Image (cartoon, rainbow, N blue to C red; front, side):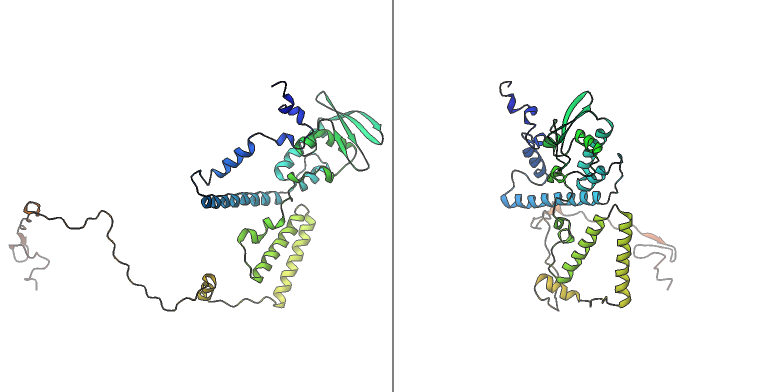
Length: 330
């Protein structure tokens, strides 16, 4: 094991991009755990494809829920640095919390102990918990390199680089250091469109309604953190609404009979007269067939005669009537 340590010790993989995310069996374990919820090893190919579609739909639903949650969250900074707000705008919600920790630790727990210049590049010695890291920074193209290889290993900048950015007044994360894996807008907009959520409808009015909803959602998402822009957007939408209502350009569509809607849905004309007969009587399982031959011993015992009762009207002991229906009353 010691002779082949370069094949399994994580320190030897620091120069490989996203090396900290590599696991030996994580891909198989995660996929097996995901598909075991809806399918089993005894399923046929068709059944497995149906289970696969169900699993993908569930995953897209969770993605839409997560997108709605972080798109409706208002930014609240903790470091008072513009670069934190920029990280909130580009990263997903979970990755932003990790990057925020790096920004805070770069501000409060890291400091520059030495500074030098080499061939137009600034070289900083950043100290953090008695450990010294070397950060090379080029002020022209904003390129940066840290000896900890944090960006190469994890895909986002480390606390030592954020410490240098704070002192060099860098307010935004350069585009070359924003990994597509952690971006909040990496998925195409059509995944979150109304047409993808509610099904495909090829009618022109339905397509245009979906596009209107998507456009309004995109506008609200862009200005979600700006109160003035939200107020301006709201006023413009109110003016558009009043313009349509006052000019009477909105015409209510004619009521389509339900029969026509059903005929269009099933693609077959509906008969006007439908005759429904009573269903055939079916005997339940286990009720018997009444084919058993009964003997004299199986005949039910005769019922004993009823005892005579006193009628209070005619004052006689009878079995055919009582005081309520006695003939003497009539």
